[in-house]
Amino acid sequence: MKIKAAVLNEIKTPYAIEELNLSEIREDEVLVKMVASGICHSDDVVRTGDSPYMFPVVLGHEGSGIIEKVGASVRGFKPGDHVVLSYKYCGHCDNCLTGVPASCEDWAALNMSGIREDGTPYFQREDGSVVHNFFAQSSFSTYSIVYERNLTKVDLSADLRLVGPLGCGFLTGSGTVRNGLKPEPGSTVAVFGTGAVGLAAMMAAKISGCTKIIGVDIHDHRLETAKELGATHTINSKGIDVVAEIRKLTGGKGVNYTVDTTGVPQVIRASIEALAIGGTAAPVAASKPIELNTINDLTMFNRTIKGVLMGNAVPQLSIPQLIEFFQAGSFSFDKLVKFYKFEEINEAANDSLSGKTIKPVMIIDESYVPGK
Image (tube, rainbow, N blue to C red; front, side, top):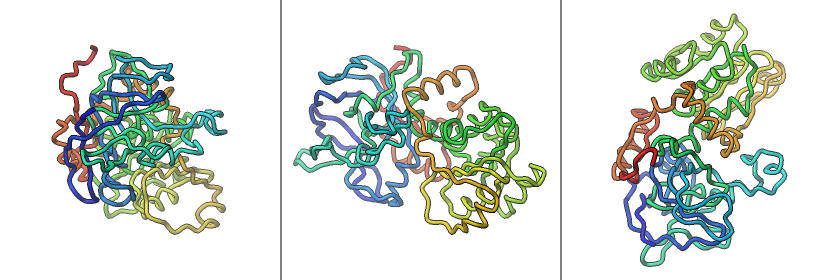
C-alpha cells in the first residue's frame, strides 16, 4: 500500500515527506494507522549522527494510533483498537520470562536491524530501494507495520494525540526511577537535565515519596517547569559548583540517587560525585566516554552506577499505570507537549534539539477525534 513517511536520507539533513510502498502484513504482524508521534532524543541523535544507523530511514518510536488490520496469528488485538507503541521484545528469553523485557537478549536485533529478521524490508521506494525501519515501529509515517509485543491497548478515553510519548521518553524517565532506582519514601534524588525524560523522572520521584527532588539544568524556564512538576529544589548549574550546591541542600551528605539525562560527560561525573555514601547513579542518555576512578569514585563510597534501558519497564503494564497517574493529576506530562502538523516535522525536530519545545508531538491524522 502507498503511505506517506518522513524519510531521513543522510545525517544532518532535513526530513523529507515521501510516498513509500509499505509491504503486506504477515501473519504475526499488525498494521497501525498512526494518529500522532512524539519526537524523542533518540531520533535526534540518529539525525545528528551521534548514534550511527542505516540510511535512508523512517524514524519515530513514540507512536500512537488505531489498528487497521491484524495478521492471522495475532490474538490480543483487533481492528479498531487504540494503541500506544513501544519497543519490541522476544518474550521467550530468560530475561523476558522473568519480567524484564527491556533486557531482552535479542533487543538490539529486534529493534535496530531496520528490516525483518528474514532480510525483507517494510518500506520501499517505487524503484525497489529499501528505506529502513526504526525501533520496530517507524512512527513518522501515516501507517506502519508492528508486532503484538510492540503494542499496548489503551481505552478510547485516552487522547491518542498525547499518549505516544509514554512509549519511550516518559516511560524511560519514570521507569528509571520507579523500576530501576526504586527509591525508598523519604529518600533524596537529583535529576540532571529537565527535558522530557528528566521531568518524567522527577514526577516519578514525587510519586515514590522522595522528600528532596533536586532539578539541575542551565535554563531557568525549564527549572520553573520542574518546580511545577515535583522538584522541591532547583539549581541552575551554569558557572557554579553543582556538587557543592547539592551537598548544601542535603546537610553535606549528597543525594541517595541521581539520574543523568544530558549525556554530557562532565555532567555525568557530577551526578556521581553528588551521591551520598551508598548512593546510586543512573545515566540514561547517549554519551561520549567518561573517565572514572573506580576506587575513588565508587568503591570508597560504596556507590553504584546502574544501567537502565527503557526505564526497565514492561510497556503493557507501565503505560496504563502512567495514564492512571495522569488522570489522577500526579503525572502531568501534557504540560510538556506542543503539537505540530506532520508537515512541520523539521520545525518540530529543530525545536526539540534547541530545547525550545520539551516534547514535540506531530499530529499525523488530523481527522482523529479524542474519545471516538
